[in-house]
Length: 237
Image 1 (cartoon, rainbow, N blue to C red):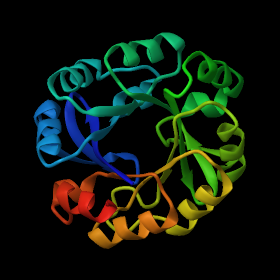
Image 2: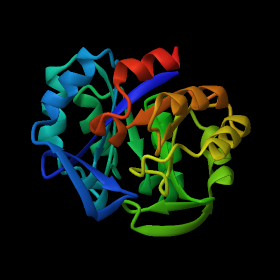
Image 3: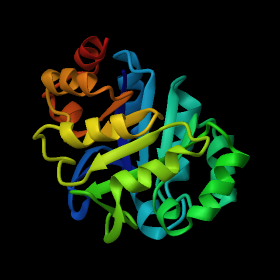
Image 4: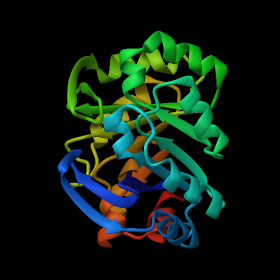
């Protein structure tokens, strides 16, 4: 199981939002590239980057910070936030991003997303962000009617790299991940499931590994010190 430290970008800084709420922000580092170097030095081989301003604006915004990260550290990156056009996908891939995360565009423009997965096979990952069983879009600002598991089945038929699953109610709360829903996803589809939201301590990593998840995104817990990258990697192995 891969461990993916999270860097959320807002105004060029490294921040975390509580349950995806923009008014509940914790700012950790002014230099995201330096933070990426710290994670890499601790053994991380993946980074999970989200352009929060981009998710809200519907287009990439923090491209300068993302470029600095990609150019300064030799690490695999999955990146999302406001990527809703083919040109934005190409822009991110040209930066050296390993896989591009698409969220809102997957839900609202599924036919277009299908086309993009065939243009970029194995390079795109839909982000399915849910409150309970219902998907949320537009930087988590809008609650949709689509069912998580049903939508995952549709997405899994496409040549995607993985599905990124986030339980919004768990995100930034340091209360443990949604193990039941993660395991349901793993059992429902054959593509790798990368779980995000709530990973706080070593036991959470061990529990996620038992669900069959292919990856665990860890954000606030790393910044607050309740778990380290090296501890998470050891548990994942």
